[in-house]
Image 1 (tube, rainbow, N blue to C red):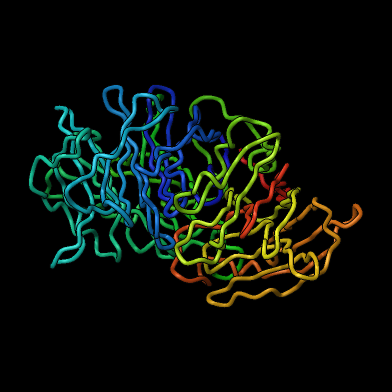
Image 2 (image 1 turned 135 degrees about the vertical axis):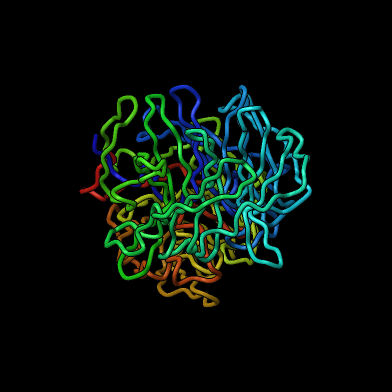
Length: 508
């Protein structure tokens, strides 16, 4: 069956996957965003449902003062003997930790913190029930993949580290996973940096502790020399489905043109087969395409990108939709659902405050062409600014908002680019306690509108390239979000919508 990549669009990097019977579960990195580590569920590897998060409490995920693109790196999800485990590294607080649950749709445990810092950690259970941790350490002789025995419930290390490999000669060796397949131990890694040179390599051994030999065809997956609209392919995890077929999930990104990309690193899927020598062949001879073909388990539902990624919230429920995110640990007293509206109580912490937690609710941008609309209501106090934003990080965002000043109300287009924060366009408006704001996005420009007497008025535009990983500071591993925000006052929103306009794309 043919299917389209990515399988999970927008900022969803470092995918890790496990299977329980006919159910697949997948997690991705979240860095400085809260809640942490979304959990996705699928019956067929193509149609994915967001069912929750591993980290929903500040005690699990301390992010106060977290720098942009720090926080949660490279989670791994595994299932063993009725329990789900997720292991990751909080770069900004606490180090390496494990959480677990018996109810994948419920709450996860408090973290078990490990007495060491191990980047890109992963768990593996051998056939005798021994649990191993493999991770990256940087030592005097360089970066390497190290193996420990571990108690996954307590995080207690039960052995000294064993060096498995320094990698296969590429830069930035990372993302190790161990599997026992066909009587051998396989060590899957990424190299080349999570940019245009990214790639997946594999080694194997007769013993879990090595020595490991490299596949003669490495890299087994990369688009670095392949003319494709998908680039930066790497950081993979592999899974066998219930029919005995194998698959790889990996990250990659889709440039808007040139070398720029703004959606972040997304999750992709490729079929995997084993050659006569017992080495894996992934995708189209080691490359990843936007349209792939493979023996999908179960029945895949055909849906358009519009159906899959458009979003509407009228705030009529008792809880916020799972897709809403905060930047760092939110002050929950600043958010309230009441009477079919969400109230945002803004402080003097702004979207540009370094390492701040402004009052903002945001959803991932998951397509290039979108129409974002929001209806904003409420009285405003002098000095208040409230509106909607395309947000990458504290030094890269475009905002359309209403401000109350001494001589009345203004609608403003503000651009934060590096250390330059400037209002590029503004118009005085007759704000009577209600206004609709709109952002249209494309690969070239974001356009910002406000409504007057039922007609949309273009306030201004901003180049999409200004909100791309390659143009912002600091170096970023995330992607763009669409959000509502308030600064120095309280405002309410009674609707927020993202209408995807990429008409030519299909998800299956």
